[in-house]
Structures are given as structure tokens and as C-alpha cells.
Amino acid sequence: MRLQLVHLFLHLSFFVIGAYATTDILRLTVKGTVSVADPVCRCPICNSRIPLRDQIPLISYILRGGKCRFCGSRIPITEPLAEFLIIAGLSLIAVLTGYRPVGFPICLLFYGLCKATALLVIGVR
Image 1 (tube, rainbow, N blue to C red):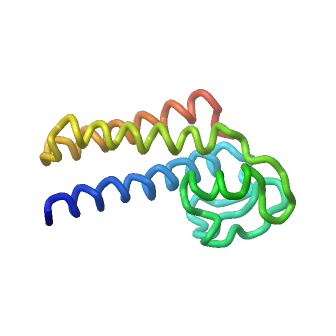
Image 2: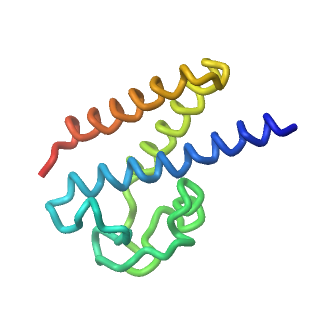
Image 3: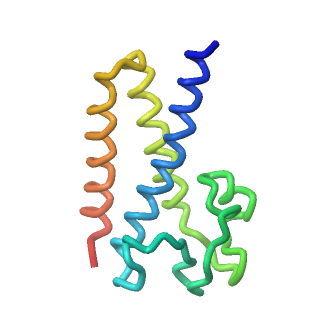
């Protein structure tokens, strides 16, 4: 039972990692309006501070109908899609490696490659 809780916690942590990676990519590709080091998430359209309850990966997107709470602008589908792909990829690596420590560097490599690929495709501005 304890091992299953550890595995569950690991998979839930992938949600946080996926959300962080997506936010990081978005901040690096937007024209320098937001610092990567800024801990506050903001709407790229109206610059309103996004409350913590709206920062739950994938779930918030679905509950808000893919729109900003304040200005109603559409959030591009690429953001939750990128989160999902990172979460799914990290989870798949964990399962395929049997949750052994060898999976950790593979997850780090996958995470880095996802961010690098997104930045190359979208382009850093």
C-alpha cells in the first residue's frame, strides 16, 4: 500500500512539472513581458494575476472553458496539450522503468528535450 502511494505522489508531481514547463516555455517565448523568475502567473492578454485555483494543470483549462477568468480571452489549446504530453511522457517513462532510479535521468532528459523542442519550434523572442 505504501508503494502505491509513492507511485501516486510521483505521478501527481508530474502535473506540477508539466505546468511549470509550459509556463516556462510561454514566458520565454513571449516578448520579454514577464520574467522567467517571476513567481506570479499572469494572463498574457490582460496581464491579470491568475489565482492559484486557476493554475491546476489541465483541470483549470477544462473548468474555465479554455478562457481567462478576467478578460475571457481564449487560452491556446497548445498549452494544455503541451502539459498533457509532458505528464504522459514522464508517467510512461516511470512505468516503463519500473519506478527504478534509472528512470530519473531519463525523465530529466525527456523534460529538457520537450522544453528545447518547444523553444526551437516556437522560437525565443
